[in-house]
Image 1: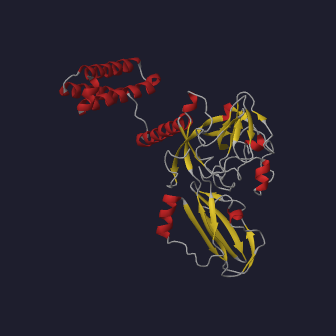
Image 2: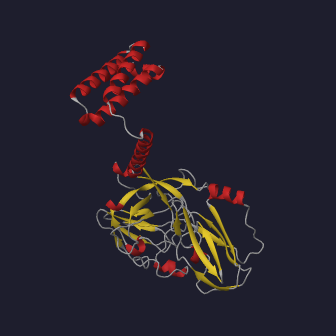
Amino acid sequence: MFYIRWFLSKSVRQATEFYRQANRLLSAQRDLLAPKGIQELSVAISQLRTATRAGAPKDELKHLMNRLEEVANTWLKPYPHAGIRENIEVFLVAGAVAIAFRTFFLQPMAIPSGSAQPTFFGIIHEDFRNRPDFKFPSFPVSWKRYLWNGESYYHVVAEDNGPLEVLDDKPKRVLLFFKKQRLKVGSKTHTVWSPPEDLLARARLMEGQRFHKGDEILKLKVVSGDHLFIDRMTYNFRKPRRGETIVFLSQGIPKLIQDTHYIKRLVGLGGETVRIGNDRHLVIDGRRLDAATPGFEHVYEETAAARVDHYSGHANGLVAARAGRPGLAELFPDESAEFKVRPNHYLTMGDNTLNSYDSRDWGDFPREKTIGRSCLVFWPITKRFGWGSQ
């Protein structure tokens, strides 16, 4: 009945918040107060709490709140800059809640590369320097496209003659939310705001490259990689299943960039023997996987020749070499090669079989490295947005 009264009565809500705040302040200052003050405050708080829970009338609650306020003003010590302290407290509590939520429930992650395409897209770009017909959109349109589709445009025209000088090898952070990278041609310095980490490689720019006044140094469109939430909760109650797209920590795994996260599709479990047939299908303990296998419906839907950035099954070294990607699968050179997954280890592979550095090269990893599974693409707003992409 108390919760019904709390919902229906403003006085009950005020009284409840009042004695809770008083009790919090008493707890914070207990070691500073005299025993008499602690006693009077405890009694006043208890009386208001008891009356509120018992359904006392509005006038009685108001009287008890006034009494508690008198006692509090008598004994509690005022904090200097109370408003600032309260705002800081709210900020810290909100930060703690966000950190706890990120640690135990949903963790955001950005896809940096194209190894999981077309399930998840990494950062992609188009260079339009040889396309004089292409015109960049106006600022309002480009800003809308960024917010909606993650599209960024970079256009820099040389203002002087001379060789390219790279003043910043990588973007430098400015304040908290902004980054910039500086290039120089002749006597003129050009600043690129919010560039991707590998701007020079994407734009095919090299130190010493010569430009003339009016030449386009940059004419680049960059589309942000998919940003998704990782479900960190489910695997506390069950083990990962074959076909799920899992995220794991690279720390301690040989051949991988350390202290970062990788996202791949789980294909092999501890104790299983894995082969990759020349037909680009996995064979697990003698059983061939196909489009009817849960989690592989799209991976094996393509029957034509293997193609980059398309679902093409899984290529072994022989198939990859024939497709122009030699040395892609060191542990699976042909369809006769077998790999035994160690107990309590996982084997993972990217969906972009001709453009994925995965377990075909570096093998399995301990299952305790797994932190969760892909859950929800929240940005950009594309056909992969939402719960559907797995």
